Length: 251
Image (cartoon, rainbow, N blue to C red; front, top):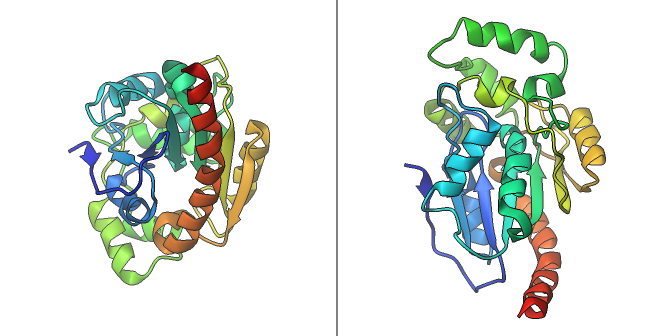
């Protein structure tokens, strides 16, 4: 199943599209989506495909029936999903009005996730994928340490149980060489063991993103759900008036 649907509240001038990181799924966004008064969809990122890459993965998402077919879109990209920004924004054109990065790895044009993570990931990941042709699945201990260091035991167990193997495409293949130009925000996770807080800060600064720190690990939508939603609401509240004004001007 590629789509997670939940009831939503009052209509707004844009749709929010939530895309998860490596090995997880739309389920990580359920609490946040329930609390946000914006129409939204959480799609399963089809990264567990042989021979995929950021461009192919983005096109598969855009062609999925759950992706909003018209109107402005706000992308919320977690972790590995940061590599999809360039292809999604380029394809959506003026429909893409904002990107919210959540502890995400957004490479420079022509670079990959692995090269952006730096040493040792840039050296180790290609080797690991070479010896794991059916997909790479971290050990439960590694998952808890890197992704669930501040999660309660029940969510740690769910994270381990539902984690899926990943193929190398989004990790090793480069993003497009044409940089995306779009307003951005970055939710900076200060206790992250998966993507270092310092690397997050560097990425956010390079993107020119407004930075919103949160005292959380790699999964703030689970570990600090209320605070995470409050930050998202602050970001999205600033878009409501601007997007509505632009729509009225076009009409």
